[in-house]
Image 1 (spheres, rainbow, N blue to C red):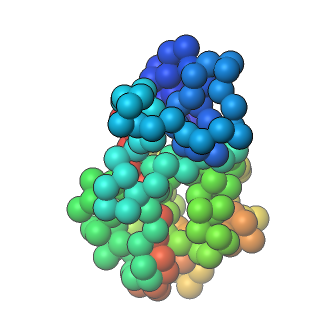
Image 2 (image 1 turned 180 degrees about the vertical axis):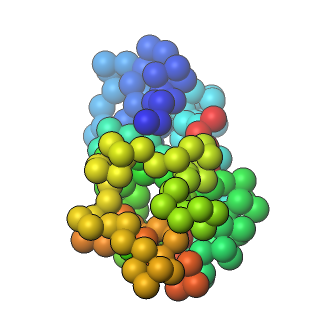
Length: 183
Ligand SMILES: [Ca+2]
């Protein structure tokens, strides 16, 4: 679960998801142009805890926020290294809401996620926390019958497999979703 940054950042203002910025309290109208950040100051910063350098975007959907970037098609190890070099981790999705947010972001194209059992078969570990996949997380996010370890070679995780997670060979090539922690 990602904490909402705007609950602490906005104070007496509200967050306008379509504008991706804080707006003045109940007087805000989404029909009006956004305030000029030059004159209104940091209150109207659009970052809201997402470092948007290097092409990352603040994504808002299903009641969650995440700081995401897609990486072009590569194998799992290459994607993990490139994402970590950007100060991120391959995206996590411990809930169906987070998984749907990520899959929305990739427009239904399968992409590498931050979860694998390369170290020990059957022990899937999240990259962002180092913690093992729980049974409830598995039930919420994996496709039926997955992870299957098909052919004994499926140790890395993609999304958008019948709208859920699936294990495939780490040497296959997919885009990846890189996620930066929200500050
Ligand atoms: Ca599989």
